[in-house]
Image (cartoon, rainbow, N blue to C red; front, side):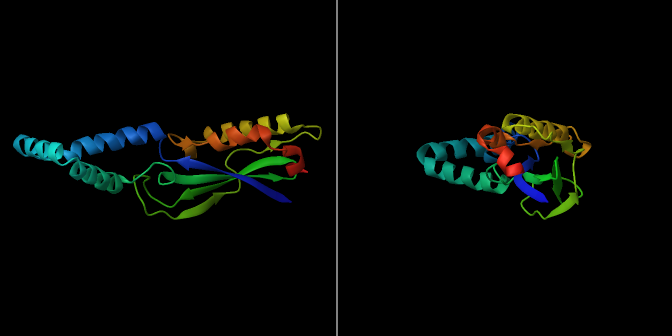
Length: 168
C-alpha cells in the first residue's frame, strides 16, 4: 500500500541567485535610456518616490514576481511503498527550463532514485534519516543537475513527526 507523505519542490535556481538576477534586471531596466534621460528620471524619482516604487513594482512583476512557488519546476512526491522509501518525479513540460509563468507539470517516473529499505526495527529517528538519505540521493540524479531541491520544510518538521506510526 502506498502512503504519500510529502512533496518536495524543485526550483529552477536557488532563492539568492534568483533575487540577485532580478535585482540586476531592475538596475538594467529602471535606467535603460541615455545618460540625460536617466538623469531626468532620477530627478523625477527624487521628487516623486511613489513613481519609482510603481516602476520597480511593475518591473518585478514583469520579471516574474516572488521566488516562492513561481520558480518551481518540479516535485518529488515522497511515499512509503511496503518497506521502502520512494519518490515519484513530476517535472514541468518544457524544451528549455527558463523564467516562465506558464507551466504544466507531468508525471515523469515512478522513482527518481533507487528506493531505500526501512529495517523492521527502525525508530522515528532512523526512518527520518533514511528519508533524508533518499532525498540526498535524488539531488544527485542527472535530472536535477543545477536545480535547487528545497528541503527546508521537511528538515524543520521531520524530527517531530511520528514516522513509525505513519509508516505502519
